Amino acid sequence: MPGQEVTLVQRRGDAADQVKAVAGTDGVFRFEQVALEDSASLSLTTSYLGVPYVTPDGAIRQGSDLEIAVYDTTSSDAAVRADAYHLLVNAHGPTLEVLEILSLMNDGDRTIYGADGLSLRVALPSGFSGLEVESVAVAHTASGFASRWPVPPGRARLRFRYRLPAGEAFSRPAPYPASMVSVLIHPPGVGAESRSLANQGVVDFEGQKFLHLVGSNVAAGAPVDFRVTGGAGEEGHTHAEETGLSWEALKWGLLGLAVVLGALAVFYRPGKKAEAKRRSGEAEKRGTSPLHPSQSRGNGESEKRGKDSLRFSGSPLSVSGGGEREGLEERRAEVIRQIAELDDAHEAGRIDEASYQKRRSGLKDEAVRLTEALRQGDA
Image (cartoon, rainbow, N blue to C red; front, side):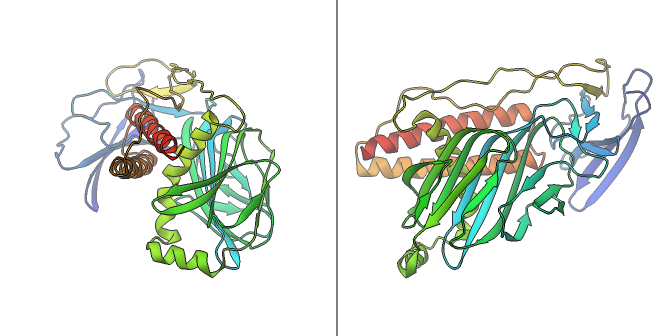
């Protein structure tokens, strides 16, 4: 894109140096005679139609070519879908503490960013309070909130928490079409009623048990509802303290567990045969205007983005002894932690899309196989 200004940022701790360049008539920009330090973190930034674009850390190599894709904008979020929609519910005490994680994909060819500076919109259950949204500036709306961050084509994630009065039914429309909805409720001694989700029973994670509800292929606007029945009581609270695992310590690790359990629910629905459809390898054409530091590839070049997928690979694992089971449980916990850390690294721009997808797919395959092996051992 001729005339587009691009900035090379070199960070060393809290200090940062910036060098600017302007793309020529061929859409090429160059940084010449720039001293690069091996210990510095490098990134390229540019702004197009008021939206900033930044390359991931580690993407820049001295003497190499790099393309920055920028997009036209739209106020419509119709191209957004959810790979997964996770809810973690703590039912201790007089309120329900709810943590939601939306793993989203913008399947369109434009960055979602309206003239009002808003992008993703989420409605919350009536009666919510104490809303906290992680790492995203938001505007409060009558029914929930809207993100102030632009959402370019590709993956995005929203993590937020809030409280509801105990005894109140949870009911809200799905903000975007979702392949899977997964709800984990702690403690498992409570009951749960739902018209839209199937009760998968109790699952175990690092000594803590959770009631698991799941749904699949949920349309945008379709109701997601459940009511927690019964109470945790003093016994549930005491057990949580005895394990040494607080809700604060558990909640982010449970993100990885929710991914695995939700995926397994697709394979093992009650009364149905296991089913799995590999969706990787699909390619989407994106309407991009690339900026390239050494050679122009032309505006509108299509860009392939792999879809997140899950499959079994290799031979099934088996559990035969107590020691082996402990080893499998430890390995599964480690894999789940790695998934959560990998997601955080990708969200922070520290890993490129191709490496992220390849690594995450392998970890999810392994986590599913480990969980299935532990299930077989319980049978």
